[in-house]
Length: 451
Image (cartoon, rainbow, N blue to C red; front, side, top):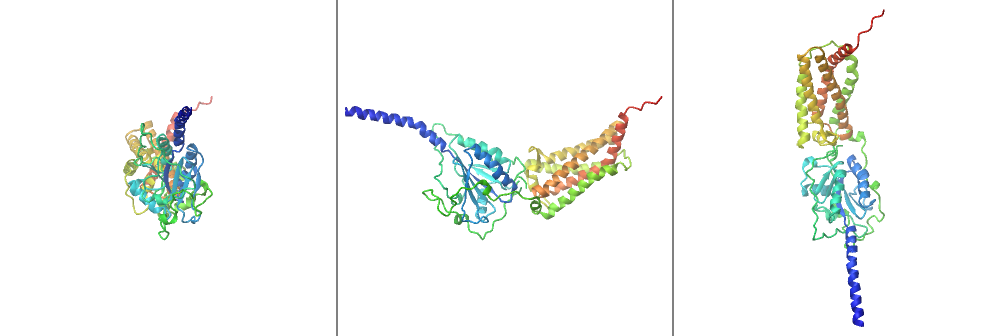
């Protein structure tokens, strides 16, 4: 009888263990976690967008609203690390402008061999992938999270010195689940070579491009390992670390005013403002005085000469924007910051330089038609010249406004193109308006005679 009871108990225990395997797998699945490091700067508007607009949405989709932890004993002026988690997604925010965060930012550049055109904040490193800018991060990060959660999760990226920088976690951390040996997941693809999708990267910082270059930290403050308490084995938070969760709104990153953006390069941005005013005045006055100018039916050589100069400038800008090459800039301004910003591409796809190149080619073609033709054909060509010059000048006004007040940097190549298209507006306004008058008068029916 005792042998029967022991056998029955053994069967029940075996059944219980068998039934608990799916439950244990479910718990392991719940413990999957994705960890990432986000470098930011308090004066970077694109960082503000990622932290306060994009991250809340990403956290809500993957695990729910997060909590924010940081060391309250460190003054905000020196605080570099913020730990954000909802149990499924963990992000360590590192202020690259602080003495503790700057070296870690530099080390991440070395560890992942990040090229100069992709340097800047916001920079998110997840697994082996590097995402830069306020367009790349919200577009690609969710996809990488889904890939990781379909596998075994992702641990902290391999950045030398990161272990001592990770702040103390207030609760037992969620560990990455072990992979099923039968079906190993495919690793997430590296995307550190993907060119910026937005303009933004501001130079570090930007991208005000999509990325931005962080300010140089004050070296008088101690290093990261001396500021943050290392994670203790028991994973309990000591009294020196904030015991009350904060929110993303407590992270000191905010929008930058247009005046602050202008002050990043007063000389170069001052040149942009001067040319911006000149273009606005040209658009307002050219229509008023063009009708008083003589009707130049045959446009001079000044138009094709300016168009050829515009083709050279726009062609070089197109090369820089499409190849990611470093632009040759003059002593004033920062061409590369502008060319690698999200505003260097219309709708995130079409290089602005390519639009300028096509416009100047159209100018050459329309000038040839107006020069070699007569009658309505020549008039339509003159009108086309005026239309291209006017639209190009208005679009240049928009782009020139972005440089000092949104991007915070000036591109002298861009300003040269703006001056060229504005000069073409003045040259083509008189012939174009006269041609329009002839076209409209020719299409009007003759007035009926009064009996």
